[in-house]
Image (cartoon, rainbow, N blue to C red; front, side, top):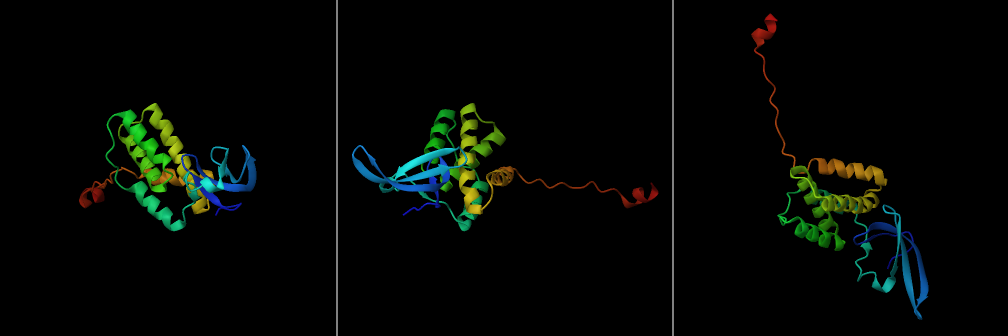
Length: 180
């Protein structure tokens, strides 16, 4: 299923690279394990191959899906609970799914809330974590470096929730300008 060198996503931790696939005996039972190196938080995760699907391990999205993620990031916000701890739990549960669109929704909604009303300390930490997890997958999907991808994501989010204003230039009468 997954081989060394494959880019994969481990829910709630982000994207990484399978660096090792080996058989191990744990508590007298031999199983095959994947060792996944998650770059953005300097973490190594070991996942039994036969449990990979159950824990939500999946491959990194492709370029076409990146366009759909951008669409999700720039779409309108969803109605969120007013109570911050219910909102926090709602967002945490979405992040745990490992679904890129659920994660993009969390990032978008927290970005909108940050621009409109500000975020609680817990939500700020969640926003940073959600963005890092999203960047970790997008960098592989887009073939970019992590820092470059983070800047790209911030640029995408900069337009979220910003109403476009048309600025009209003040026209000077031609005669007044000619006399000056």
